[in-house]
Image (cartoon, rainbow, N blue to C red; front, side):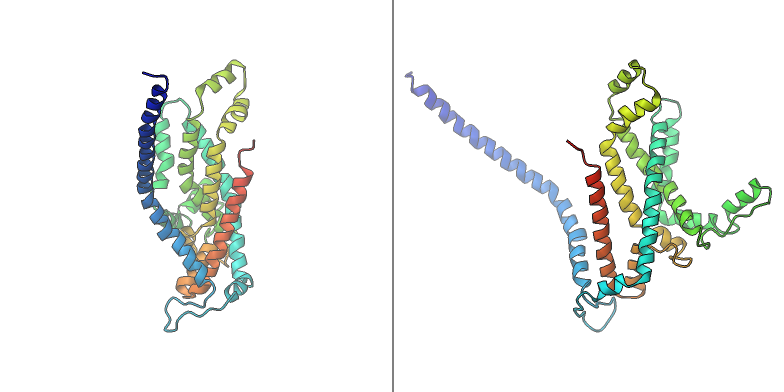
Length: 313
């Protein structure tokens, strides 16, 4: 064999190998596209299309049931919305609910996760107990707590028994001062188990070597938490912060079942306002404008949170 024959054979063998590699990558691309297509179709049908329709309807006077076709009205719905005191009350109540519920629910869930992560007997039982409200329908829970909050309900009965009849509680859902805090308490109680499970999953991904090293260095429990546990939960706490915030801003079911926005509009929210405008008042165009403004609001808040919690180089 001459000296020039060997390189030629190597080149001839490399060409089929490159073709096989290209074919394998093409096949993997097709398989990946096929596996992602159901999610992409659902995203387009249930997210992009409704957003596009809401954007279009927000500039019309469309009504839910009307013999007349929708007519383009420009920015009239947005001008009406920003001059509507009911919208600002709804926005204020939504912000109040989110500002209180997000830190309380995230912090309580983290405490429960730390307790459930301890190596003691009975942790599986407590994990099940904490998670049980999550698998129950919010409508059912709201109906149950509406009975608990009644003037002659369980809560006031307990208060009366503990104080030996000196205090009888209040009508929690019909008192403008206590209506929203009562809904906050119930909402945190219902959802805290879900985020406890997420915190728990994050805790169990932290290498045990880090805790052993901290123990050898004589670190206290608080220093171990602040220097090992908390920094290791960066991705988990970002996910929890964003999901709780979105859930808090989209508050609707509890309001619809328990208070209908009352008393004195103290519990009405932006989502509740949009649903009422769209179905009860049949102002589909106005409801679309409310929904579009709410979408931009949630997107902005989530973007700011993601920016503030990003991993810095």
